[in-house]
Image (tube, rainbow, N blue to C red; front, side, top):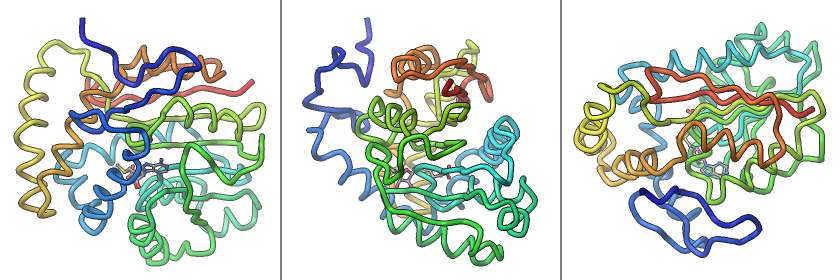
Length: 266
Ligand SMILES: C[S@@+](CC[C@H](N)C(=O)[O-])C[C@H]1O[C@@H](n2cnc3c(N)ncnc32)[C@H](O)[C@@H]1O
């Protein structure tokens, strides 16, 4: 049977963690992930459109729709990168004026300054510079007080974190009672015909596109391999339950190519 990824016995620190197809020492993964996103930051949004044929926009719209953000909520977009999800949230709650008047807070948190530099420019271009904050931090150690957040979103980020279990515990720690957790992530197709086609696409087309558009095939090979090794829908749901989340719900997108995992802190 295939060895499940990201698994260590409870309470036991793994010595090595998945990085694409390889296992690397825990201390190395963040640096390697950072190099990937340093390399692709300038072309990241364009590549998302090309790779997914625009599907990522529908998936993010579905995430924001399910989140139903309120302007007075304290919201963090963790691993928020170029602020694509934060911008959608800001628009969904009625824009910068609505956010400012309600006095909640919308913050992009990411470990990579290059991605956030692109995000800051996008936010400024959208006239939302005063409405969306940025903080450079690791999802495993957020610079936030306990129970200080109403909604925590992470889109295509958890897969890149060195210890997703820790990021889940940290999300649970910072969310206030009644707080909402929403994860959008690539997942595992559950419709029989999709799997083989998708495998071919991600093994061959993605690295080719990465090479042609971003001049970086290796980063997009990492993307495909990291998706393959990421926990499937039930496994991620069980990791969330272990972190203390309740009312966990899963929605497949595009037959399970991506999935939304929603949960609450009670
Ligand atoms: C695939 S991008 C997703 C960006 C954005 N959420 C979106 O959906 O367009 C992954 C992001 O995760 C960030 N990241 C990776 N490891 C992280 C960590 N440990 N803590 C916070 N952010 C991290 C990367 O810097 C990158 O910006």
